[in-house]
Length: 247
Image (cartoon, rainbow, N blue to C red; front, top):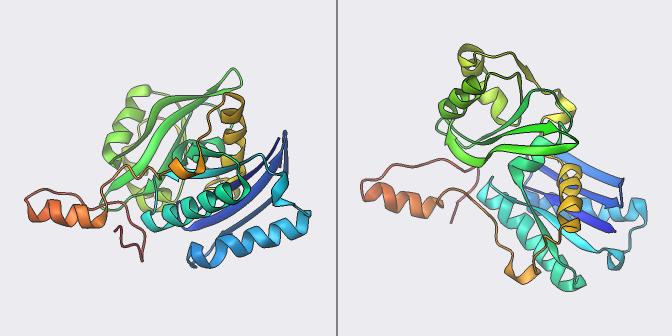
């Protein structure tokens, strides 16, 4: 089984190819360029380096969200286009689950934190037991205080990772009442290799979709919807990275 994975849910752009249980190649960039500038050139470069014939792929995996509205759309459009052109299925991998997968086998619990703005975070709580990843709290968009309260209630050591860590670090250090760690630099951001790892497990269970029906999972309203909601007296406002329109 050969699979291409795409990750563009945040500032990181990443592509990876796995074959059976081997990571054949991965190209990851965490730099201030739009994914429309980076994702396909990175795929071309990786394919050339590993002599990949796209026609040999069995599926395309994509981080389906949550995350940057613009980044998710670019990743989804790329995955859909490849899936349709190659006539292969897509494997939709929850962004936060894949981020937690970076720390496969960690003791205690793993809590990814993606910055969703205005003290909100895309997050979840995960544990690794019996060789499997256990989802204790599914990915969600909540105030950081809410996830910290759940962590304190669990009473287990926790490892944090994600682009929300530098944003919330001071609050975490003041508010978390259990032993905690921060993941090191090589493991603390989104990686297509992790998306591919989970996608392989999903494929074994038959969890694929046709390219034409794939849609990103935002977990939050678009900017236009939030502005309309605010005009009607509601409150919202998280979920975008710099330059996103959310339309």
